[in-house]
Length: 433
Image (cartoon, rainbow, N blue to C red; front, side):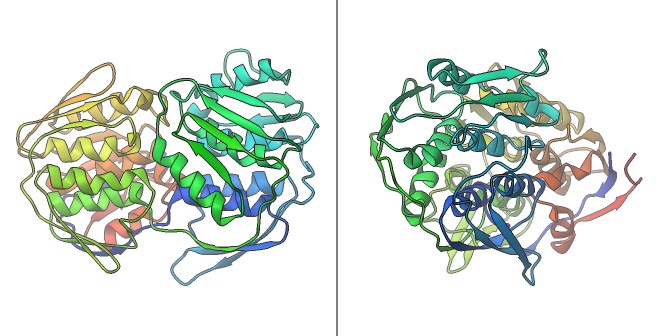
């Protein structure tokens, strides 16, 4: 684990926000399923993106990587048509998106395959798929009886009706939307409960149109899917990521002016709600041609329902802690099953820095403080916890020692370089043990 010491500094300046991880996963998979050659530009090769590329390559996709000047990549992808499984094991590392997206695609072919993972991914909820496996007579086996992964699956999807619980994650529905159009007959997905993370499905449906796949959305309760469709290769640029941009937007509000480039308010990304939340809290934020600008603001607490934007909670906890009054986070129970128990982790570490946060079953009650102290904190091997704690240092009175700083590699490998670029100061205390 890498330990760094952060010296409190005001952050200000201009950053090009990293490309969307959610969009990148989808673009790589759709291009990989197309017959022909696609070009996907503005891709950040984080750990999660690497495993999605490797998973598609295991199915016969060919990917060439061309580095751009700013450290992003353009991928030239020749689709896996026909789909041929070239490996007996698919490694998902710690990527929940890769895991849940790839399983229905693997079930387009009949060979047995083992899906593995690391960290907390081995215990992430998978019941919606298990229910489907049993209903559709698809064999599955837990190779470690104490956890969900490694998971062996064998069998093929067939056209028909798929009933799925939408309350765990929309990723299960997205995975099915990738695979079902390729079957020989028509299918329907029926959502049997409240749909969580709807904006992520909106991203999926919009991108499927770009790649030539038509889905009829019946009021987010039923998805009608014609069979015998084909993915169409195309050129696609990945847009900036509001999930990552949220850290810098908050930095502008609690510190100094931040100019966040490549954030488009017309995006389908659910985490663009961060803009509205900052405004509701009294923050000064405005749009410009190439992004958003946030200025130092006096913010106040509000009640925030995070059922559709759970990834924002770590940085919202920082912003809420430095706001006047009380900020209440509700409907965030799924956060306990992310890379860490994020409700516990962010409350514990900000309290270690002088915060005043209470956990509830599904959220946080955050009492505003004037600022943080210095101290020792941990990332809990969670990229969003690590980045939130870095932003918290802006308003700390002493140095912060962060254990597990390398967790950012999961989604934003150059985060610490960007942190320095806008005035942040840190030094490494040791080199990985």
